[in-house]
Image (cartoon, rainbow, N blue to C red; front, side):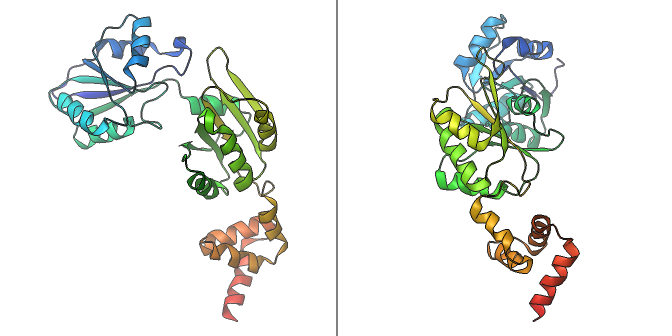
Length: 286
């Protein structure tokens, strides 16, 4: 690790479960850094103790990010080398590390990634769902209404979706997915790389049935198949029986842009977009 006149922030990935997944580079950076900023110092101290690393440790988390962020920027300005770690996986993904990295870049400090484990990517590649193109959404809102609104905004996304969820909200989230996004293929992954690792593949309905008689335990990663139109809930599927022009008008009334509405209606009705566009234009001219 070279010493710069200005400090460097290292974004160090840590194991999501199995300690053997840490990289040799991450171990070196953690040993050579002047300070390690951790989401939970108690959690990180166990990791450091396991690998006999004695670098000074400080906390950096959601509740102290503003004050501690200023402190860490001050250390960087004096040339210190800081390693940032989250509880598990890559810092900056669904945690306040993203804010610190942005502040460091804005102030001209170096920001260096030290890649490694990521729960979302790990779940994706074992889900059995398409992995060539995907969308990572992280944690959904805890409020039921906000959660359903968020899901509604993703309901027409055709790429594979990756979500994180806490065990106490899993059943409610699965129910909301079924209501808003319909029954589609998915994978539920829990405790990835740990002793009780489990990946369950099936439909949303099957996941709902499974967890009705099983209390969720551990941290969950949900991987959902992208929209095809076949998984639409009954009340939405019924709209396909109406005329395409009326269907476009209905989507526009819900706030969908004209071009997107025409594209969606053409896909659902199996029609060329130019024909739907022509009919819509003629209707508007009447």
